[in-house]
Length: 551
Picture (cartoon, one colour):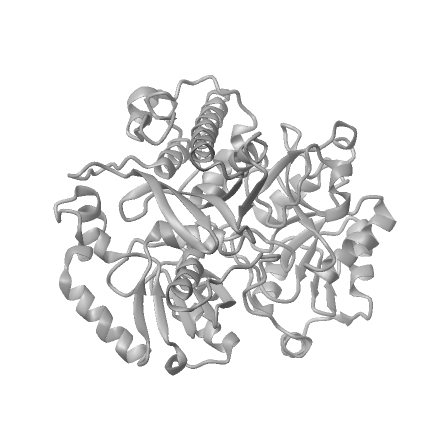
């Protein structure tokens, strides 16, 4: 059975960001990608036409081959609410227009003539996206974000391939609200309140490490369990209006402390919900999803709990991954065997071979060299202090560059992080960078080390190595690490080992291959453009290496 998952349909879910598509064929995930990588519009909204075209191409299929179109929202959950629900009525009035359903059915009949439509609710799509990729037979599944159809947090159990809802925290009461009780939207509100911008929640988490949690969030975000909680994003301005900051104003200690207080409130709240889930089931493994699960410090807090023996968060745990979740859940409903596997890497996007790369380089008339031993050549460039654009294999799924669309640098060089922030990423100087470390050597450099293949956990750098790894050690001594073994990415793993011979550590600094405000590069053309428009020193694409001639 060929199942195409999407998270956006024409005319119905216009507010949905991170538009994406995924293909599941006979219970096996084949491809998944976000529209932004093709359109070059960050957090792209709208129907994911180019992402769909990629998925079909990767699967060797046409639109006529699709049996099921899985949609990662359930419009009937909206309709079961009163049409005067103020939140959704304001945000998406077309949800309550039955004509939109007719239009969508006609659209699907034209686009995918053989396809049956299956709606999978937003939080169930999140739950499936993590549990079905975790390799766990049973797990507590926690989904937490800005808003599902009717909830901000849901607790599920996964057992033997079956996902069952246990309880949730609703967005609002029966009558709805213009300002729903949302965990994710509280974090977003504070992010904007601090002048860090829309989709700047990662900045807030990074800023929190510079402050102390001295502000009282009891009336803003405080969750004891799923029945006793207070979530009020409107209270941010009411209680702390004097802390509001414009984007061009200086960051003060008060702002840093406010970010730290928010981070502590989030961690405490989700820790309490995870502990409650364990108390209900006795299951010691956890799967997390939803946009809030991008918060690495929160994930690490749960992972380190005495009631947790295993934690899994898939790389596209936010809305960019629910197309995949909807497709996997539809397969579980309609096929005899539930799709269950362990996602070992994030490489589900398009890939490009040497022939395509060389054709582009010839057409662009740029100087390049083909190398037989690319890992050794790349490691030498890094050891010389050069900042390298690294473009290999299939593109990653999710917001993190995980070794195929990455910018790499030497983590042992003082000031390297400042140089990258200034000349390439054009972002705030206080934001940290992450390392890729050889999986088997992680315990040497990081306290309480565990595998972290998707850069969604933080660990403290061991005291002895902090002076030796200044470019990846954050102000609080932590690092958001990606672990890598030879099976997951043989070529990049070889770079780590070659770099170790030259600089003594099997580790490189890794950040996403893009400039500020742009999506991560997708194609060789994107990579070449970014290389020549930023301060990158070298570009490695496939077997080809480009360097800039310096005057």
